[in-house]
Image (cartoon, rainbow, N blue to C red):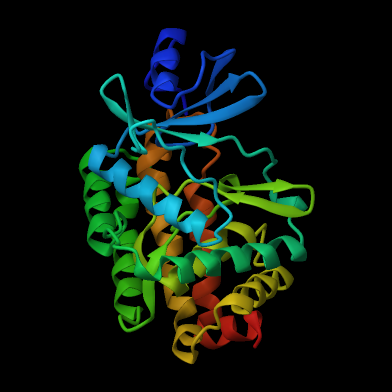
Amino acid sequence: MAVLTPMNDHDARELLAHYGLGPPRALVGLTAGSVNSNFAIDLDGRRLFLRVYEERDRRGAVSETAMVERLAGAGVPTPAPLRRIDGGLVSDMRGKPAALFPWRPGAMRCQASVTVDDVLQLGEALARVHVAGATEVRDESRFRYEDLDARLDRIAASGDARFAPRVPTLRDALATAHAARDIGLPRGLIHGDLFRDNVLWEGPRLAALLDFESASDGTFAYDLMVTALAWCVGDDLDVRLARALREGYERVRPLTLREREGLASEGAFAALRFAVTRITDFAMRAPSGGPPPAKNWRRFMMRFDKLRSLGSAGLRDVLGD
């Protein structure tokens, strides 16, 4: 993603002054991320990360940064936002809310490099989010059934010959997956988007969970399956990785029997969520006839088909006890 809100040295000086910090030595726009504008700011002996919120309003940014601060204080491995001189967590950048964080060094994993130990650590960290977020006031997800169905309406109305004909099949699959979900599963604060580009590693150690932009109310089983679909699937579901992710999670928060039985349905809905949003947010914006975008919606239809073929019992066998 390109930087949508430009920022110059004068902007950075004004911003940093609200934190009692001196002028920047360097300011670099970052292309990572799909929603916000992000920057690296270098000071003498220190680097900071600046996020300019492109979709959230000020109220949403205040709520999110305060939540992240509390999660970090409760032991979740995520950087807490810096506080301004006046005690606030959110600043203004050209009319948009912005927050400053300490820079966390580290690298992201490619799928081929993910190990069993990686996903054991990841499962533990995800469970810590669920436990630490128990008392958080949660916003509704932006990716409920109704929201995804509305996106399908947009695809149909677009007339895009690449995707509009697929809407009836996607709509039927989404309705069926939604109806199969167990509304009584344990729920609370979920990350909602714990993909490989939202986790940093320092060598073999998990260094930080990033980007709580999609954090919301949701079932813990759904969040676990989002993470499994993101980390434990290459050309097919990797049984070793999936079992290790579940094992790491249960070191911190054991799953109930009801959750185990609901994982396949939650995973099917999660796979369709990402298939639909990747069509609307990436594939429809790509030029016709060009290469598919890196975030390919078909990869999540493959995951959906895999979960449908396994069913609840088959997935429980894959994940083990």
